Image 1 (tube, rainbow, N blue to C red):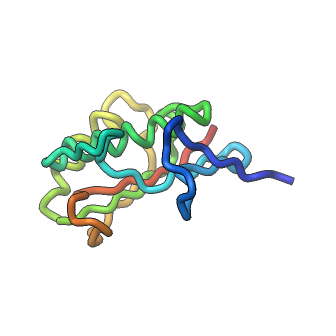
Image 2: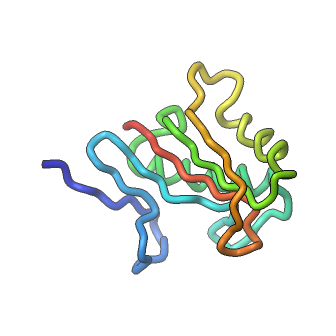
Length: 127
């Protein structure tokens, strides 16, 4: 029987009511990541927040033994529709162009839990 394995990063907050990432067999489920660094800095623009959200997810994927090349699906949540082009531009730097097979993706406009976050990105990766 497969076991769930919680993936966290060194120094990460413990006692949360969710796991930053869960590995189940060869699949990794990464919780929604926002554009905030370990010191609490949040870029003011959508490109910066998108890049940081992807970098935060990347760190969790790497902690599980994978890389962004393993990402199968991205679920993107935007605060404002007018930020789509900027989010897409930053996203393409990670998953566009040279990637033979970009992840499947959907993007929805959804109000954030905290208005300081312009984007939240969750991922599913095969390991």
